[in-house]
Length: 124
Image (cartoon, rainbow, N blue to C red; front, top):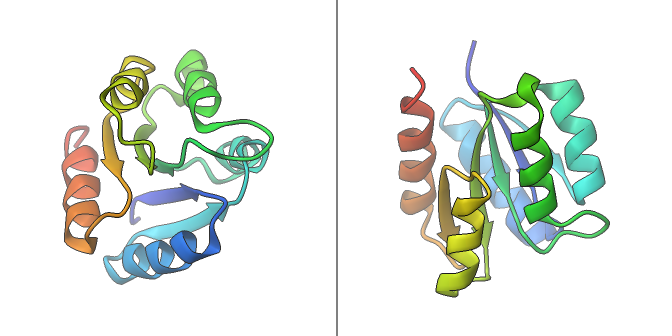
């Protein structure tokens, strides 16, 4: 069974190409457009990895990350922040909250694919 990836981002212009890219690489993909929907999809889809934007409506990505990390049932879910918030303090906060990696927007397709592979490979 291919790894499952949840893309949580409120920008269609990011979600659609990321979905296509991840599906091309053989991953099973689902999208969420706000933090609340991301939590619902985590429950129903049980992803192996979340590509998580920080600036999400309703519940922001930092809070989603905290919720995932505080739930023992989700301890194996990998998280990669994908955000335009590229300051050192933002990256440090994301990693301190338990993200496995942090990619700043804009990103190259090869960069995001490589990061997904690296993060997924760490638990195989």
